[in-house]
Length: 240
Image (cartoon, rainbow, N blue to C red; front, side, top):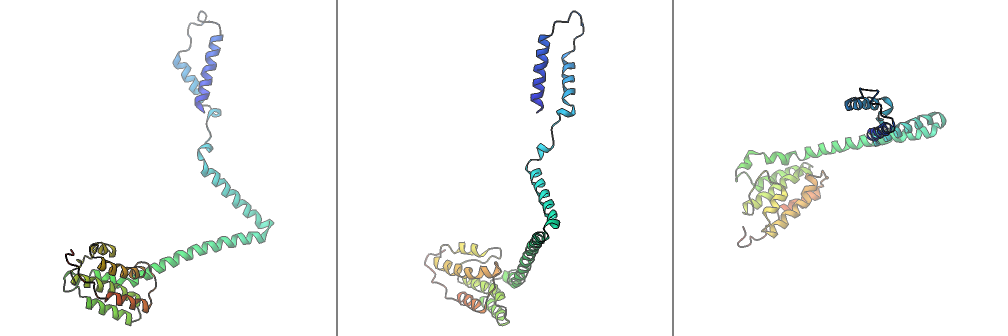
């Protein structure tokens, strides 16, 4: 806004100067260009030429004003329409409680799922797994059966995962690495389609329980146990 005003002021000054008679003979000391610029800047710094800060607020100011107006209208309903006022307040309270309850339930479910997966994670840091002899499928199957017999089928699932994994390792189909994920093991079996299909079929039922927090029934654990003990496909000749 200041630039157009400045240009208009300069054009007006030039027009006045051109129309005015030449008084150089009577005024020996005309204002210097610097004086003219300083005077112009002084005029433009007056309050009437200052911009408004409200223009810079933009959408945020509009939304703030709308919210303030809405709150005022709701407060006014307390006197003019108590029933509608109570309905709005009740709806807001119910919505807030629903959000807080959902967050709390999600946190609790995630914590409970983490406790259920603790045995499988502890197995991966077992020092015995550092040796090939310690990676015994029969020992993993025994731990799984113990959890299932205790009425914890969900906690048996990670042990069944290790039982099948160690069976594949002992058959020479892959190499165990505690840092690998299930899908990374599937990539390692890319040149063995039958083994890869067996492994991915196990993961389809394993991952929703271990990583998705889905409840596991005794029947589902038994199905996973059968898949973990399924005969391994014949090793194709020339397979790497």
